[in-house]
Amino acid sequence: MRVRVRGIYSTAITKILLDKGIKVSHTSKIIRERLGIDESNEPPTVTVKDTEDKHAVLIVGEYNHGKRVYEILKNYSQIQWKSKLPLHAIVKGRIIDVKDDRSIVDIGNFKGIVDERLEVGEELLFDVARPFMPNDNYAKLSTKYTVFGKYVALVKGIERKVIFSRHINKKLREDLIALSRLSDVKEWCIRWRSSAVLGKIEDMLRDIEETYKKALNIIEAGKNADVGEVVYDGEFFAILYLDKFLCDEIRNEIKPTIKYHHSLKSLDETEIVDFSECLIEHYGNRNDISEIAMNYILSKMCEQKLVKIEHISALKGEVVRLTPGKPLNNYSLKRVFRRAGIFDGLNVKKEPGDYDIMEFLPNAPFILHKYYGRDGNLKGIYVNLNTPPDISRNRIRYVDMEVDVVAGEEVRVIDVDKLERACELGILSESIRDYCLNLAERIKNCLESREEICIHDLAKTL
Image (cartoon, rainbow, N blue to C red):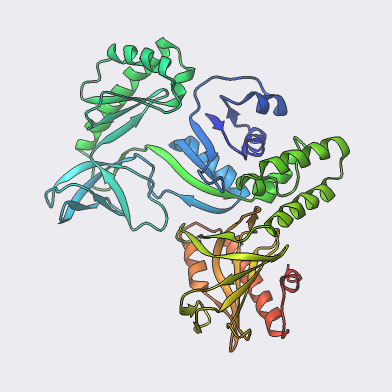
């Protein structure tokens, strides 16, 4: 088992894995120097890397190895999204319905959809074509199978004979084309994985041969498989929203690291992070420099005309871009609404010209919304429970924990059912759920005891 780690969380994650006795490979020179590890070019069996928005990390790789890495790293995360079936698992299914050009498939404990018109009652092998995430009702299936080796993946059912990872350069591609011609994999396509940059010719030839034998055995085993039986595990796939503050502390054990390091890096505030950590390395005083760095970011925010707000649902995984806000001071935005509607949770009419004073703190797991009519009269209060917000000079981003507290005619905790559902699906742990419910009750008590409220009042509930 060997893990390749890439991205802004790599120092913290590599240390966590090494402390658990997990081998890492294909590491960068910087990581090797920081952690005192030897260079290894063995092909990894698992990759851990940033998601595209750098807000979370993706774990993908050989199923049992990936699962082991996930079980370790989920202890350092707040939110977990794990595919209900392995990516590119091969499973026996039965067609139970056909609608237009799509077929509904019974795959045992789940149902799937394949974009082909097949015969009802027909039993076939299907590939889990994309991650089957917790809130998905149907698995996306395909009749094109993928089987993985160390350096290659073989794909059945496509016309192309050779495909390359985008990490393979033009010169190596030419060599791999020649190598592919030496292999007789018949109707299967050879997809060269990024690990091919590490391989020796004899090892890669052997890998093609062994992967082809494995693929044929899988297809053969599938002939006698029962509906719902997984005949090939495919790859483990999960997304983890790591606790960025915890990662800051772990990284700080290796190299001077400001608080908010991973939060700021995830929103591309790299220059201020690097400069601040240079100061800590030379002068110490981590706490003060960390707060100075965050205050600098907040001062730059105040120079913006509007700040974007990205609200991510823990339950659905969807990114909702809220009405942007005009900065008022370091910790608040004014959001003016242009359209009529209803204020969520309050059941109060929202009219054009109404506005929200949104207050936040960089280390607080909630955001305070005070809704006003255009005449300046308060219409209601909404406290959103979420991960501590990531803050940059022009953007705020957080994951909504689903449960909220509202104060209108009465103070209520709302959407507990959504929080419970996220827990049932394994997205949130029971301890996170219990923490959120307890915090919601404390916020409710705080709102009931005060006529006026600000974010600093709510911070006292922590």
